[in-house]
Image: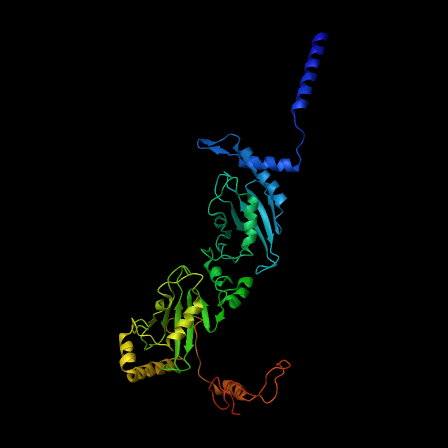
Length: 408
């Protein structure tokens, strides 16, 4: 019995020596990250189905992803896996500058069950975020566009998702938005025409109520009015509606419809619609054409009249062959527009943003009018030193004629 025990101890001692020689040393951090990347690259399933170790492999893969994330140190973005499931990570992003400055947005990162062989992970915010790429209904961020609508194993990692989330708040994209209203109001949408009016809206997430040079924004319809200062249509006051396509800026050219009849070669006598398409070569080009171009074209039509391919052939013929009669017809529509100034708009009588005019009230307007007509005999306190103050006014004293100055 003693001899057997001694032999067993010798065998155990030999086995222990072999094990000690076979087991490697504990890897350092770089080795662990390298091993983690290799584990992430391995497939977790085959066409015949998932392997039996797939759940354990998935959990280890996600932990390896988290280690990679910690090494990347994505500033301003912090995440931690859920205690209940590794497929949900809780996150928060702090916005340090830009339009969303001082924003603190919490979100959930949802990872597919067959990661990394499945679809792109999703990001859903805890609170509403007014952003072109965030759905106002589900609060989900459009992550797929950042990865060409496809998750590529061995190439894409979860820390790339966090980088994209942060990027969305600093570089705003407006093409194919989940929130069309935010896209239209985005500063990058039309920097020359809408930037000043809309940056404040993006900061406050206020409803769409800005006035842009007399034009009111309302869910695809802008109410407008144009004052004609000179030319054949002088003194005309024409109200119109600017209709914007629902898929703007990828759709058709916007349309302009006048409230009152306008005798003009390019205005249909039946629908009162102005031929806007000819001014844009019958095609709207995104990132090239903007809505303020439409307003410039509307104004141009009243000063430079074109008669080729008219919507009103009678007006075109009179303009080319009988200009005197053409002017008589134009004066008639001008007077009609002036007579309808104080009437409520017919297309949107109950809309609070519709442009309306009220008659002159002496008790209210006379003091203001007299103050405007006074000459400036003394330098204004608001003028800076060296500023020009010659007592001239844009309005001739005693009249309402604009762009004039007092006699020398």
